[in-house]
Image (cartoon, rainbow, N blue to C red; front, side):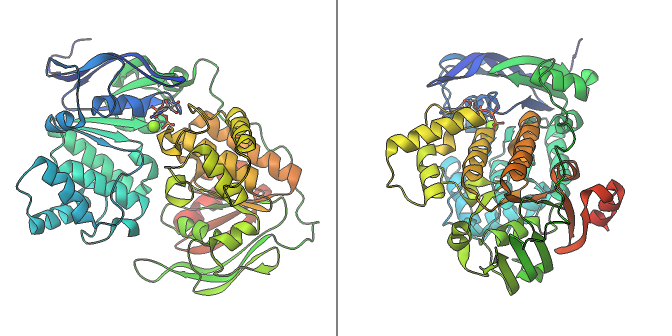
Length: 505
Ligand SMILES: Nc1ncnc2c1ncn2[C@@H]1O[C@H](COP(=O)(O)OP(=O)(O)OP(=O)(O)O)[C@@H](O)[C@H]1O
Ligand SMILES: [Mg+2]
């Protein structure tokens, strides 16, 4: 094929990057053209983030180099990269929590430009954030912002730094549907301005919809770069997982629990719960929910309908304005996360580093703290336990002593799953778990949850935006819409269309 208009801007030349015990990039060569949206697609741990960090000068490769406009950059530093307009938007936002949005952005601007005027920057933040996805208040302290808002701040920063090559690492994974469409338009606008977007994702459908070219990675290598004319979901999946590696969906339910005959009391019960929203009004309205031993209750709804708030209430991270919350008959209303954890409730969050893991601590330490509530346990025993979990859940990490934050996004999620499944004795609250998991691991996780709840009587509240997942995993399905539960059904007796209607009505 001949593309006369293509203009190369940057080349990754034969790059290899090794971490202790892991070959993250293996002789990777890739060329980026001006005015393209180029998607990097690959399963968890395949090297996507590492590749972006090499391009942004954050990691120095062991072998190979980056070439910009034909010039080899043997020791590209992050400052060089920014000077060339290369900007990395990390998978986990990297902002100073105790400073406001405008302060965070000023820090970034001041390092690269002497002329940053505060009032000007403030209005630019308002303007840009609206273009990118949703309005951000420049005076808000970062610690008050949601995960998505933090990502938008990172994007505003890049935009104000006049990024020419924008490396977006799984950013779309967490954006609510409404914001996502706007964000795609923003990316297309960058493209029309002759810029380059490197869109890192593990979602095949997203890459196929949005990108001009797709590069598939597996185990640190480039499998293939394909042009738009060759885009096909099945073909791309095969490139990603190998000929037989992809499991579309697990076999239908192992066995459905007969919940009607079990007249046991609810493990988790919300009784007419109202919760205030940050913006205005109520985020949750008059919520009635209960789940029996061994039952899997799916709560499905489109994004922004109160799922995150519901999960936070259930784990004690958000206070209840009126109504009661019981665990096994015990009133835990507004007793805080410790009491709820002590009652045996685990939490698998879509954003573990935001909700319940400490990125600076090692896997062993995170396991110790969350599972046993203390660090004073024989280190040998804990380390052995961590290794066992790493093995069982396929967590790739240099060692159990590695700080959690250096693991790949999917590996962090796997670790959370391992730890919480280990911990939760009574019930597990799960919030959009599949966001950072590749498709293969997602279904195996769903199977694991089903098997555990069947064999141990652990209850699960599976809160998700994905109707496919909820239908696959649940015994009972509830629909949440506008902060209200608008229907509860036994999975066997409800049609998909009914649920879809309730989700959007
Ligand atoms: N700083 C580091 N120290 C040690 N190991 C690392 C480091 N960064 C990445 N790794 C490991 O290198 C491999 C590739 O990681 P990378 O983050 O590039 O994967 P990824 O494709 O982005 O995966 P995900 O979809 O899970 O985010 C993983 O096994 C990861 O655990
Ligand atoms: Mg990654």
